[in-house]
Image 1 (cartoon, rainbow, N blue to C red):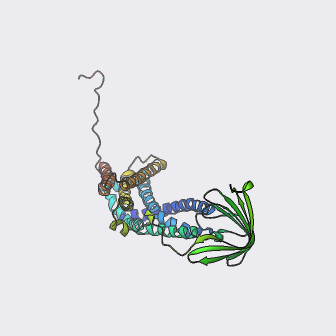
Image 2: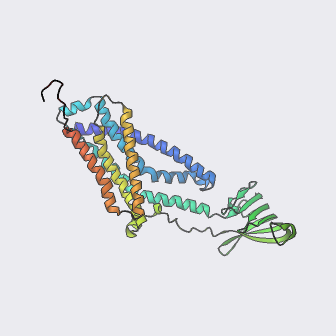
Image 3: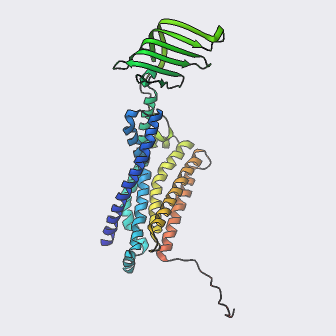
Length: 369
């Protein structure tokens, strides 16, 4: 009982500290990335915190898996360095006896990782896609800040409004530069403009202005100037919610199961593989921690990061192979995760029973053969 409780208590401390450090790193990286998306106009600057929260939730399965792996290896490696393992081994405990308390500590975390990968991952991606979709479907006039030139969603128009009303539906001193599909450019300027709806189309009505058309081959000089009292231009379509984007990562796990296409099975294999990765890495961590007590901490940490990166890349590669139809998802999962489990179990058994390869010794010089 003392053996189990002391080991689980130290695993808890190590896991909490590692998780806090990893979350800080991931949060900082995702914050920089989200600010970059907002700067490019991909997300609403007012919804940065919301987008960041959904993104962090989507990354939690990977962060928890790595934190659990590092906690197991670092805790057991410390026991080796400080000769605590000698005490447990002298009392009849082998390295395999650490599986009980380690998995008793790790199984709730594994369940959380599996639930996050199966349900929170698609939900977070769906919410992020919905925010981006809603932001992209804004009307062109809604993108414009008074006193600033702003490009439209299609990239063919440039808007400028000197000032607007509080609701953003009407502006003063409007300037619009437009280039159509044939390369003809027109410049509109008006004293005022207001937004109205014509069915599901958003229209901008300009009053008291002029239109300058450039590049007209039928006219001498290719320029035509005309004045107007009222001019209507379409600036957008309905901004009513159109549903969540149908990206593969945003599809629910149930939809993947009921629609067994190659792409869906690849995504499903990845989500199931995240939970199996946590299981295999925990087993591998117990075997990996047994080493030379004189070795430093950096050696184990580099080996842990290398093993995690290789396993994660293999998981992503297997998803691509399944999605492309090169392999079936069940044999691929058995081959990848089964081989890692078998390798980890063999390595642990070798450490536990002290297996070693037979060494052929050369005869001493001068010794009769």
